[in-house]
View 1 (cartoon, rainbow, N blue to C red):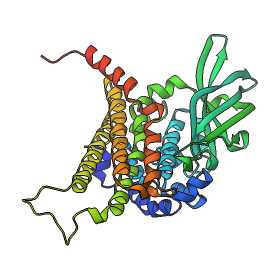
View 2: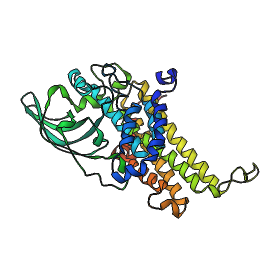
View 3: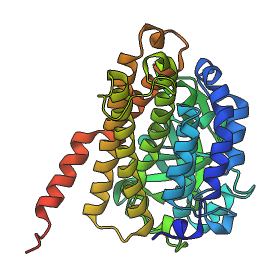
View 4: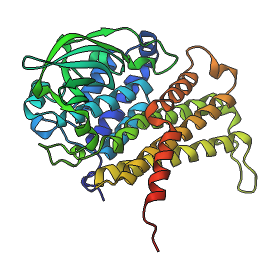
Length: 383
């Protein structure tokens, strides 16, 4: 049993549930603006997502992946984009634990409400300069960057020993944001581009990407800071889709309520369920199956230790859950009638959001399944 379960429900989950109606109220406005509405961004911060995984020394919670899953899914029932932003800023906050101590102190000097975003695709370059590294480049698809205080970016660093990838913490005063997030879905995430022009980043705000990938933070023994990046990354991407699918199912039930047996026309035990009752049961069941997969990922990540096979299974399970959820919303949209496809209709927005999220490179089933199968085949067989 994880510490989170032993201690009772995580307070972040209750805070996320309280914020979900506000996120739902502003979901259309967030989509239209292509960034989270200000009250929603403030609610994400107030709920405690930015500092949830932050080091305890910085005032953070050093929380659990089980707690994050429950909280992000709860918020996702209100708005997929809000849940996506909440999940990624929590994840980025966790990554700061791998910076040198002075770098952590710089990022969190204003407290655990500091919002950190991240662009870990090595899209820029870093060259040695006096006192640190000079960074140049453009990093696309940085979710929640519009209300961030810091961002983490990965860049190819050239040294006399050769090239390697490093991660750098950069304050908001040092980067520009380019409005490039023009997509069909998850529009409210404001996943715009970060631009750095010859920015000097001191050594204490830099760490080799390999350190994050390995997952052993040198200055923290908290369980969440001893997690290989690939062990938990899929969960942070799939958790918003779980909540979004729950929200889609609720909306679908409202749209087709005249076709579902209700209190006045309940189906007796001797009768076969009608087509819409079967659709409801299947959608609920497949969504529950995805939740069970993600809960196992969360437990595995919280409890450790991790073999390469454990991390690969987590990736496979997260991608499989995303596939299941995308199938559910596909079926819901197809069966809800023409009005479900109207511009501005919640169900078609959730359908777009879930399919877009499931298409993320970190949730592609084929490569993740291939890695898992190769490791499984190489593992010693019992008996």
